[in-house]
Length: 223
Image (cartoon, rainbow, N blue to C red; front, side, top):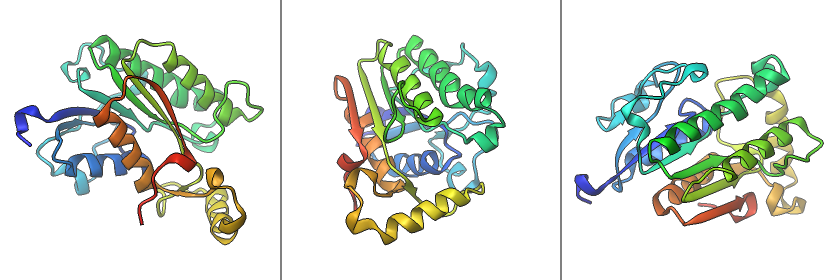
């Protein structure tokens, strides 16, 4: 593809498990001309050497609204934390909802009208689970915005190798999921991070008009 006709993508959460995989796939895709990945700390050397990657350092509590990199063909968001990392429910909501909404609003104001979110299976603003309720709330916030294309990807338990942070409950869940795979409904089976990232990237590049939800069982699995 001619470089001049390639797409520019905004990737949020590029230092996390899903976000890093989105970055790797986007940087290797010939349809992508440039990737802008705002993070708090510089990205690792494994991706930072790409000449078409721009990695501005930002504070998500005070995003630079006037930065010229907000305008892109699509934004992909994999921002997220855990209650343990956040230290409180308010801290968790700030990252998983407030930061996501702020990034979406800045991008939309700059003309980025395609947005793809890595959410969660079971996300609902009426959920009894705090985690799933916050995920549902941010989905609701995004749906109220005027995106030309909005895709909500709802993976189940992520299977993507060791995380940079310690999550023993998730490790146990993965072992259980693998052992009981034949009897677990497909919607709730663990899914590879690479498959989630591929679904997000496809949605960003295709930019289907309207709002769509991709449940975990509908995410294509690669062998």
